[in-house]
Image (cartoon, rainbow over all chains, first blue to last red; front, side, top):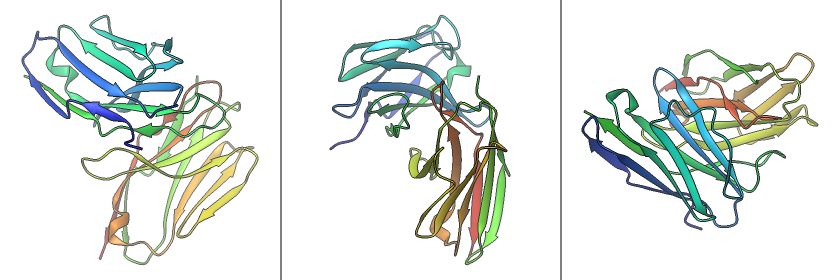
Length: 115
Length: 110
């Protein structure tokens, strides 16, 4: 099993540009999570999906952020327009099912720098 | 919603000594408590977890204890080694998805 796959691993962009982060969860996992990690705020849950359906997006910072999961093996997190304060490491994680004490497995993360 | 507090934020120990990291949670409905280890530049990785029907769990040099009445749980690492140096996160899940503590940076000094 390849684990959770994220791309790109690093992204440097200029303020105002659109950024798209991609995630492929572990095959057979029903739940997918997007996190943002910064020194100041730690690990924050942005949004999560169960069976491709967004369940809770209350962690999405503002309308500039959007996430989709068109099928069970692919999800995107988009920032448009990007701002310097969006610089962070973005992790995608998947689990067999949200709740019931199911372990989340993290991808390698995407390091985003917005200049 | 759930709130997880983690202490200390940094911890330095001599190689071979024990390290203890403590977390408290607020939602009595939480019933799953994993611990993750994150090395510099890497992803968080699960090292041990405990469910609410168990008070203690051990895996070699690491152990976790849970006190549901007091709503706190702890990670114990014995015989620490330099490779244990990392950031450790506790988390709690119940009616809400995993909520993480702010992390503890553990440094094991050889």
